[in-house]
Image 1: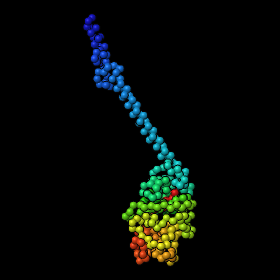
Image 2: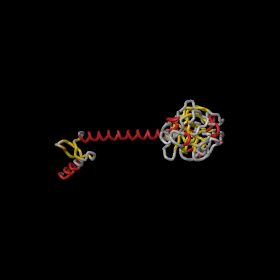
Image 3: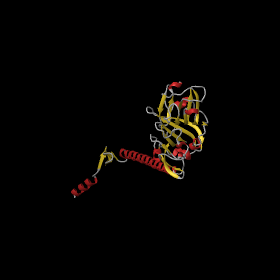
Image 4: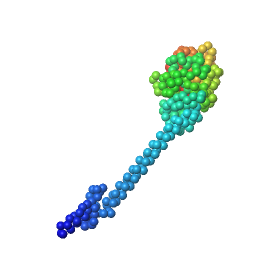
Length: 312
């Protein structure tokens, strides 16, 4: 009988212990013999609170991630309903890349500049690419029909801000209130300037060949920023606008500035612009040309640039 009583007591004591003579339990979480309803339970409560906080934090991060992914998908899809970023709610797409836009009832991929990087002076907010011009080539010479027709050139080249020439349907189909002009020379980063000029399209401003002045001139120093420290212009004339042309095949530009050493615009021998031609070098179609013998302010130049035209 004594044997069975001793065995029963032993079984009841399995997993039990005492601290200072008080009833206690051996708890795996605490890893020691702890006073019941005291330190072990307090620690368990703290651990429970910590786990709840972690779960809520992870859930918050998960919900934000899902929400951002849905917003991005919505942004790309919604772009298909807009003919240009000029009409798009800019805060919903924040990446510089090609988006599909509705142009002339057709969805085409067009490079859209959404954030400030690279085109520093233009900033972000949604710029739609229109043209890319290689100043070493005659493709976009002042006399090229590409300035006066509605024929596109190299549509696939319009998906990146790179060195491949392109003319997109946005040239004749996209209204705007501002123009971003940018140039990259062989030894510089991309430099940019902004023209505040409203029009139904760039085609509407240029195709008829009539000279048109900017709403507000930028000034010769602003134009020189496109080239950088090497830029050179004569000090007079400084005519700015679209379809700039002079007698006797002197400097001309579809968009830009022409300058002269005489106090008139009869024979300009220097220029900075896009779609250029004429003396002193008719084969520089985008960049800076200045005749060394006609007193430009920074010496003779023949700087051919990669040019970018975007609108907003």
